[in-house]
Length: 199
Image (tube, rainbow, N blue to C red; front, side, top):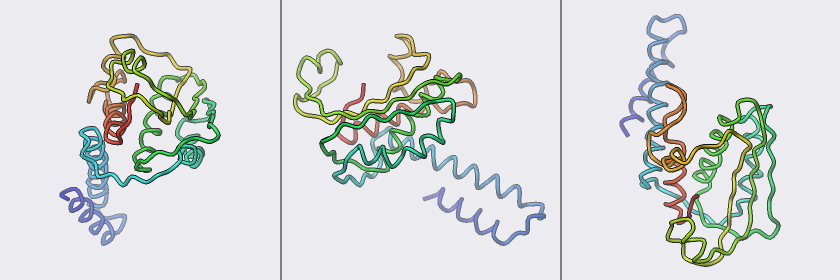
């Protein structure tokens, strides 16, 4: 609510100013900072699983297909995007905007791991998870049918220490100013709040 007031006031001030006005650039900077703070707040809410979700029954195939052109712009021309949907995919009950954020965050991470270009593959599958899977992945996964969304890339990969910390808030392997360290913790929060599992 506070950020809405800050951004709204900056917007109103900008509408009443001419571009040559000495305060114009200052108010633009206030507005940009407010937008960044709002985006960070949304990520923190998603991580802490306090985001208000609007779940609907939907197909992940449709969500990914409708994101394809945006994802191509996001990852750039050096990376080949391959989408492998499974026919007859089961439906999931999830918040579409949040699932889109998960996919976009994973795509950005993949892009950053492939500075020389490569291949990003997104695939969907119907899977049956059993207790052996839960035991292997150190997670409490009730056995049964699931819909899987897998995102993989041909990037540099990560060592065991990094892999053990990827969902930690503010942990990043990127240089200063290159990332908040909230991308994968946001993914984790959204998936858990949506009653899913991430590995």
